[in-house]
Length: 139
Image 1 (spheres, helix red, strand yellow):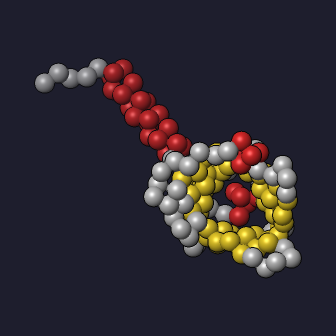
Image 2 (image 1 turned 120 degrees about the horizontal axis):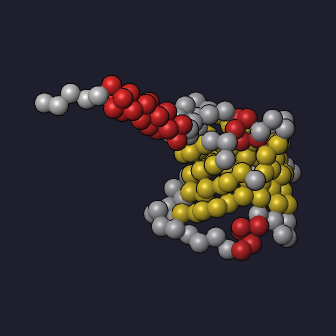
């Protein structure tokens, strides 16, 4: 058995500490459901679609029009959804314990409910009731 030199042990210890810190910082997704401010920022935040999958998990290619669509969540609970040809608005509510995001559109009382499967300050992944998913990136 070879005894390690003090410098080698110190180097190994520093590498282990660095690796542990890096591992924890990379896993910065909100396991507990995060919070509403991660979705809206302090005043508002704009999100754009980056990836979509079907209910069976297959990739569903975003069209150029879908890539231009955006949704802006305001901290006061309102949202605006825009595309090149239309816009809609309404109110939103996020339940962190249940990991659900509900959008209620104005003037028609239509509500859409999603399960939030991933959430951090830059990424939001929504799962629709049919199992399809939409991944959004913050602008």
